[in-house]
Amino acid sequence: RVCHSPTGYGLKQTLGESAGTQTFDSVMKSDVIMVIGANPVAAHPVFASQMKRRLRQGAKLIVIDPRTTEMVKSPHVQADYHLKLRPGTNVALITALAHVILSEGLQKEDFVAERCDQQSYADWKEFVLRPENSPEMMADVIGVPADQLRGAARLFATAGNGAIYYGLGVTEHAQGSTMVIGIANLAMATGNVGREGVGVNPLRGQNNVQGSCDMGSFPHELPGYRHVSDSTVRGEFEQAWGVTLSPEPGLRIPNMFDAAMDGSFMGLYCEGEDIVQSDPNTQHVTAALAAMECIVVQDLFLNETAKYAHVFLPGSSFLEKDGTFTNAERRISRVRKVMPAKGGKSDWEVTVALSAALGYPMDYQHPSQIMDEIAALTPTFRGVSYAKLEQAGSLQWPCNDAAPEGTPIMHINEFVRGKGKFINTQYFATDEKVTPKFPLILTTGRILSQYNVGAQTRRTENVEWHSEDRLEIHPHDAEDRGIKEDDWVGIESRAGQTVLRATVTERVQPGVVYTTFHFPESGANVITTDNSDWATNCPEYKVTAVQVMPVSQPSEWQKQFSRFTEQQLKLLQGQAGHEAEAAVTK
Image (cartoon, rainbow, N blue to C red; front, top):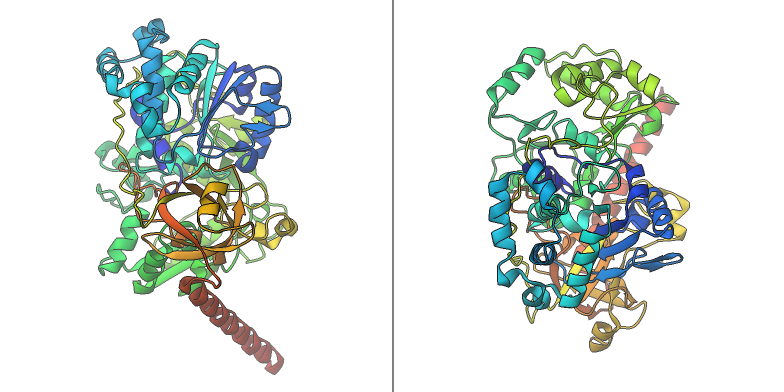
């Protein structure tokens, strides 16, 4: 919900299914690759190796990113275009690219006529061709010269098979859903859907984000992306589960915190997620947790959220459980337990036991039975079973009577929704604006050696490569503020303040600073705000107005964090001591 919910929304609206269109191997047939808001080298290194292999064979590359990432220039890889846009202007850029393609007649009219809704195309075409959407009119907003925008658009439209790959730099914006729609519009207009080497390809934030979304993690959907308001769909699940389901959507995560603060949301069960470290506006999150009456955390580690838990349940790693993961190419793969769960139970067994204690027994003896239920209730999974997965190795959904062996490439003859739908993508500037008090834009991301909030990788020797989160700042901005390499700097936003060491680098552009979020003591999300995507409430991690100045001590939040962490450790040590004494007494 805090990474790719705009993907689910945007692709559902335009193409009819909340998932990417291709296999990863498809990139080897691409003639031009557009990478938007993603750094596969750092976040998806295995796929990045495959992409770079294709680039070395001669495919062209367009990188759209406010930073100079390894995809822009590294050994054997050189982007043909790097559109170094201003953070928050994605939608303006994608519309300007479409303007070039339509105004110069580079669109694939035959594809559009056969495969797409004509009224929506006509409306979109009229909108895109308005003079205000031209590169010349948008250049100052985007921060990219018009000739660069035109060159990139022409290359993508004319080079042959064009594939778009995008990451959280697309979705984690106030217009994240709009940008996903814009990407789908561009793919349809250029005929780059429905065969190898093309497509709309979201690079998911974790290995099973797709699988989690498939199973109904959005508060308005049941498994298979079917809306809870649909009485027919709801009836199928009610009959199978023997309960009555509400037709009203549940709360999104930011709404949960707001409701907790006003006293109407009292409990939270947090499994495999560290919301205190990963969600924006940390101080608002912790205040909401403190206001709740019951917080249950189930995890491998006593993470930051566990400090607020009333009950802690043991989680299990991928080595300790049977099940499946579904990755960004919709590939369902078996996960096989190789050791007993150190906590005593696998995750699914904890859920079954908890459900029974709450008065709703679940009669599952093995995860294969859960998959059988998924197949029975989810049309796109109808043909999936453990037996079939064992035989095939893996399957890509949709896998059903229409596609018994799975679906490597989607939308081949027609879109899931029938005709592809174009939707206008009007650019609106984010509410998070720079001011004299907050003149810089902060954007956040990941690094290769640490994984997301670092709960796992911080406990390994990877800290030798990356032992702290640092703030990247352009030499011009550093000089203006008297900041030198390795200086401690305070970063202040409308939400809060933290302190990091500075890295002075031209990887970022003037006016933009960047940090990672792998270490809890860094407080990267203390300074991110509550701004979010208009359609899904996905947080706007990528645009935060800040000021940066030299400092000589930690922020007040960091001092409080240290005191709280020390208190928690003493409590744990005391509990361990009591347990040891009790064991001796026995």
